[in-house]
Image 1 (tube, rainbow, N blue to C red):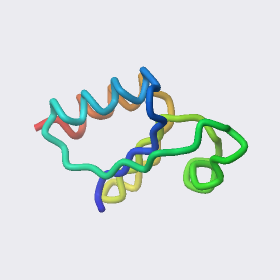
Image 2: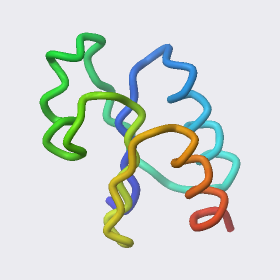
Image 3: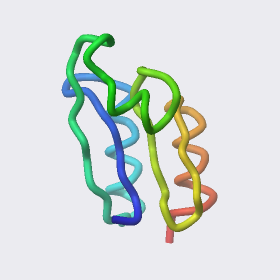
Image 4: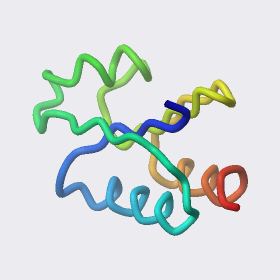
Length: 80
């Protein structure tokens, strides 16, 4: 898959990223993570930290945490 998003259900920052990806018409896969930081081993493996959201763009070789950075990336790079 080209674009993957690691997100937590109910997280407003994750929802903002979902909305931006949808508005931009980007196909992506969501990996829903556990509410407990200590259970987010997959997020840590991918990004080096346990916070969400995390966007992975395999085609560009980009792994990015922090919703503001992700939103800028979507607008600059992924929006059609």
